[in-house]
Image (cartoon, rainbow, N blue to C red; front, side, top):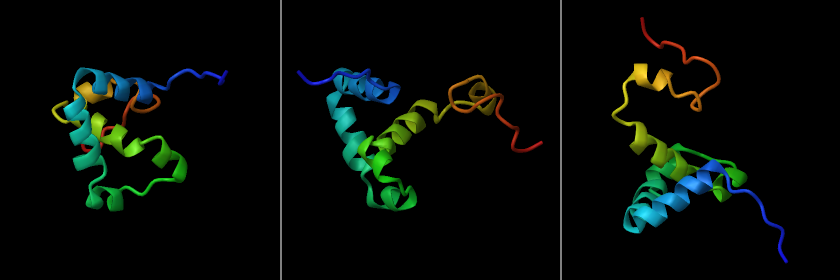
Length: 88
């Protein structure tokens, strides 16, 4: 019997997206994450390629694109500690 492992947060999000809206997942994967310009702009290690990290970046962008900087500062899993203020 194969050894099992715990799914990563990223794998859970991707699985949830497929379950909720498979066509949206396909569009995000095929049209956005695999877009030649995006692939060129976001070089990844082999490990991150295998983990489909570009799809994770697309998902994060779409989830957070209308979020204000003040709201982003409250999201603790984006960075360790409080986010810096880029402009004063």
